[in-house]
Length: 106
Image (cartoon, rainbow, N blue to C red; front, side):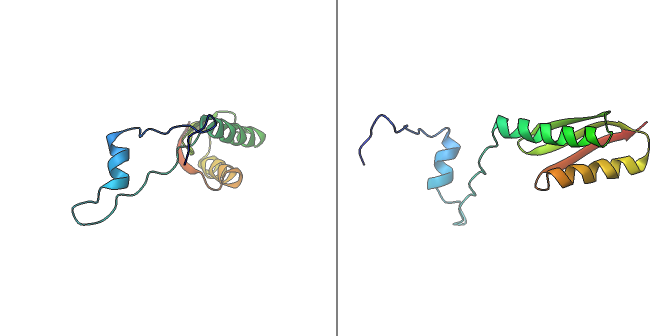
């Protein structure tokens, strides 16, 4: 294969990346490959979708943080049922997201 201007050279990022692909574990097993990183744009879009859905349902005191596809809800609600409802809203608009609910009653 010949290198041309359109191709990017990929240098391994770390020693761990090199050994993960080339060295077996002592028991003969292979270390799993890391899942692809989620882009900041994807996280921003997910945050916007979840925030819009919560606001549309009246949850204005719940903040949304998204890190690598994990949705973190923070804030306060006045009734215990509202925590469950907010969780259902998020699950409806982002069914594949990992949800971490840090919402208190107050």
